[in-house]
Length: 407
Ligand SMILES: *Cc1c(COP(=O)(O)O)cnc(C)c1O
Image (cartoon, rainbow, N blue to C red; front, side, top):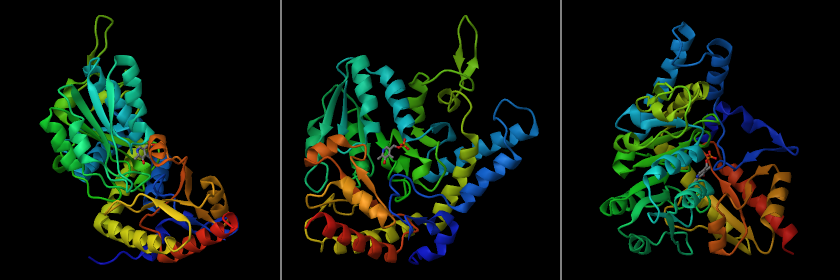
């Protein structure tokens, strides 16, 4: 495998040459949203200037082109995650909507006293929809703990199952700790107990090769904007057999077979779950984002990010009083840390003054913050275009900030 040279790719991302507070920008907030390459932006521009038309209902040329783009995107996503059929690929607004779809629709099949298991490191978007369901239907929520490194306790996970366990919810990669969870093993255990597994893949798809069939995922959710694609679109993969049993999520156009006041029928999969005009422009641009990642090579991207992760971690740990949260073996390229008694917010503000864009706060994972007895962290996360020079500048920046805040 030829190592990835980020300098070769940076010209594809014009935003990377901008300045922030008079300093060259160093963008290390990729886990929140990754930048989009020119081919993605140009596709959006091209469609708006030349081909914008609604899908599915039109006989005219533009509408047929739009429909073809939308379905080509569905096929591209299918191939990307190795789903068996495009019927199992549902477009949503993002990971959040995808999980809400599962909680609302699959949730209709659950009864009071049925149990779901989720992990302490879930993003709020994989917790709150299940709490809403708890209020509506009286389900029971159980939580898998993790150790100090951020590794899930699989023995405890096994002990949480009862004959009432219906759904397991787990993130493939933690957005705070970088932990890569053993989702294949966890899915197998869930299946032994007759439960289904819904995996939050928001942080995984741009860093790992994901094969939903190999994992044994029943549901798998992710967002385009975190994988170098446009914002506003995401995907829910669902196993056909489950999707067929589930009631529609929202009602409206596109999702119906026939509407009558004496009774309405639903469209076939996947359209049953896609009420209203879909995001057909971003769907077309998403094809380019997937092509870009796969042409670059997901394995090469991962190896580059891992090299940056080790290089940066080693240097950061030389800073007195710096604590890293998330030290699981083989973790993804996310570094959450705190400096002495400094507030994460102050650290983030000062780094921004140096042109370094990191995320601060609870990262939509307050139960995980509670687990570690903190309110938030500073988080740096890498993407394919980050360089070792940027890693050096980041470490120097953290040293300066530490000297200012912890004297
Ligand atoms: C970003 C993120 C989400 C939410 O994604 P949206 O695009 O905001 O819907 C969910 N889970 C994880 C792990 C994330 O990182």
